[in-house]
Length: 486
Image 1: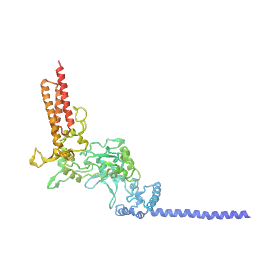
Image 2: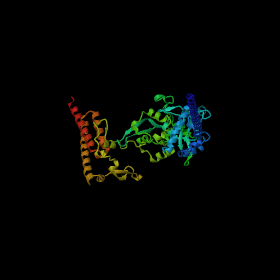
Image 3: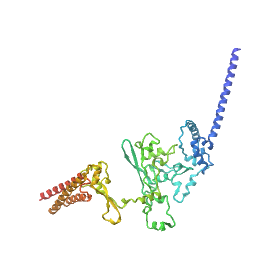
Image 4: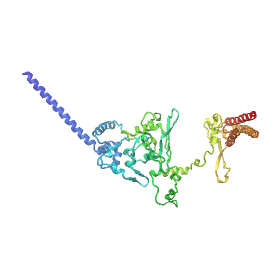
């Protein structure tokens, strides 16, 4: 009898626990369903204060009738569950005040092209234009450039002001015009690390690389030509009272950069600071170009081109600045190359042995303006008002004992002129004796270099002395060879 009562009690106890267990499971499912439904509503996104501006821009956007989760959660059960689990972590972060005021979010191309949304075939057949440039989706979506596989989010990802997302044209400029394939790395001191310098691709009228040409990893490089994005104006333009017809000049074969020069600014260098915004290391751990872009453009983190490359400026405002500055070196080429190479360190020519000894002033980081301090009119055109900074002995007094320049400059110049005159006279005598013409011409070039420098030793006394001594030695060798000849 006692055993039967114990068995009945165990059954009743199990039924009570079973009811609690079933009730708990039902309650959990009910709460989860309510939670999933509540957190899937777009209004829930604004419950975090950092999301308020993004929610407001969505309400004013063309996608205001599309729920946030339809874009920010990719199709599929696995993506849905992953997003909800991540959402729990975000709730904890918000409760602990660990949420950034600029959260990172990306939209998968699968969300953009899901049923009832955007159809790539339909979009690809249309050429989009806004009066400034033209664009075709079918030439971009799925293409690869330097490790970047172009998707919807590559271009349609920029959040700015009241725009929920917009096309950041800096992406276009970075891909088409920035030469990212061969960045020049400049190693600085230990405190400043390294920086990567990038250049601008040449923008020809037509692409210099055929579209059928496949680059590294089977990629086709994007065209850098102006006409790949822009059409020449079809009508006559009147600017500042001047009429201009592009068709006329294009018929003559004129290229766009015949007039539109300097329309793309040099990209800002990539410094350690850009890497340190996300990583604990700088550019010294840079990957190969393709791998670098692949790592930073695939995945769930939205990393825009400007995050690393900065805003690359392109257009008429850049050209205006370029025209105002007037790059004189486009026409006035190597005006002071002899003086620069005489003053700086390094090889100076094939007929000079060794390297140029560094001037102590150069080692001390003194540039041309350290000695050229006295303005004077340009001798060739004094009426033009143009002036040039001439060297003056008193410039030495800024750093050295008073009167040093007055004493040393004449000394250097007298020594250089004296040796120059000796070698020049010896060259004339040697030519009269009929020395080898090649050797005589080489010595003449060395003398011409000293004369072209114009400072008579001041730019680099040691080098000038060595150069003239080498010239004299070569003359002596040539004369000895001539006199020994039968």
